[in-house]
Length: 444
Picture 1 (cartoon, rainbow, N blue to C red):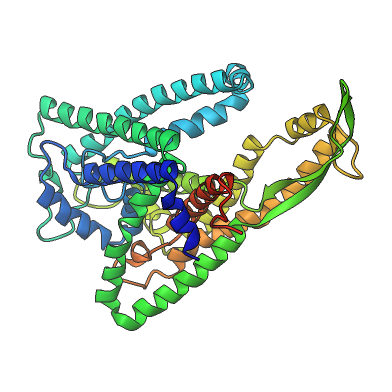
Picture 2 (cartoon, rainbow, N blue to C red):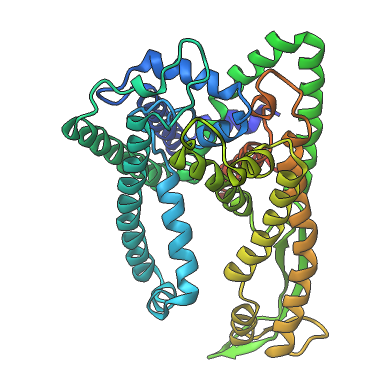
């Protein structure tokens, strides 16, 4: 069992890549703990702790998840990797709408480099916009609720002048650009996907604290039951993430000069969870909008809550309400079908197979092949979307675990999916490099 790990560290170039990636991840976590200039770290820490234990604890836990606790603490890397992920998704979706982007995608490496450049520009703009909004909310005291006795949400910034706020915005924007650079360096010179590993580290950094909260508030028995439940869910997630539908593909024999090519049989793997974790991120981000609206509008004169605000608070924002759970579940299913329809083009796959002399046994090349692939994709997307929805709403169904509710369930929802997906992808990449050197590898 340990022989693949020993073989990994005995390979000089692979060992260098692993330590290179680990070094950048350490720098990322260091920057996530350094507060921005002009931020009262002790005051904001008390407010974050009070907010995480309130009724909106899951919302704040979701905000903190992708930044590893850095966002609500207004650290240097407070924005984290989210602007780059959002920009990448936007550029990817625009390839269907803008013909220029579709042409660049088909140009190969040169077109991909141009698309990456557009993604970087959009990342900077989104980081500047997001940091400005967060600093504005913090300056007005709307970023965190003043729920605790020692929490004053309006005093988390020491300097609320234009110059002081501008410095914080510039520092956060520069931090987001540095995080984007870290992710690209890991992808190019390290092991695994850099952006995914940064999210992975941010989530993993919060697991010990959340486990300690459950242990202290509920005792050893509840903590043990949570660990057993997490293990069972983890096994189920790994099983489904590895599941694929293998569509057989046969390539006809063809003569090129004096040599004969083709005649081989292979298959096209279509994953059960083709969309990955993107639908969950979309749905979670959309559900955060009502909370943001309430923060921006505040209370009416006299401290009374208006009717529509009370409805939002009790139905859309409250994570334990059945309306919130049902709406969240339906959003995940919708975004799963939407994202799969955008990223997987059956007609393009059928044309590629026809161009290289491939065909599905019993199916004519061209439009019949595209129709068959659409049929298979629509059938396999349904269990994938249901799986994503069920895993994501599990924390909402167990709101009584821990003092912080669903926010204290480790590996819950999006966090569990990201940890499993990133872990499996990284192991596969290390395994492929070991197989190139004739080692046995991690996966048999």
